[in-house]
Length: 118
Image (cartoon, rainbow, N blue to C red):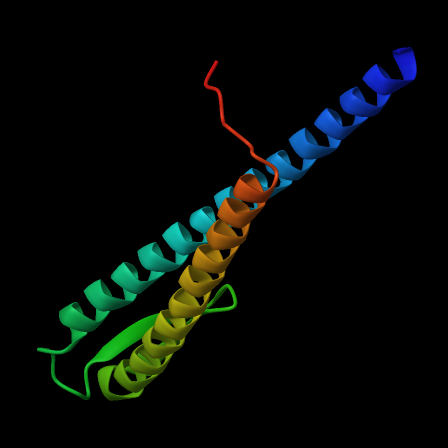
């Protein structure tokens, strides 16, 4: 009888560990999505600020911790490229999040998992 309880307890621990792993993965993906969204907003703000300025006006850009002097006409295309790249990364992260969420939902149904709030 004790060995049956041990097996059930071990199974319960494995399920709890898997659930925790799913939750941690989803949380880290959501955090990355938030960071990327914030960067996209910053790029948008800078772009909106620079667009009405003359193309030959000096501006400064931080590249790998080094402040570099450029002109508006040099910086705007780079900002657009970076922003487009960030949007692609964001789309990929959202897809990963949805896939992991679906995977977790299937796992919960398969193992008849019900989440109980403390």
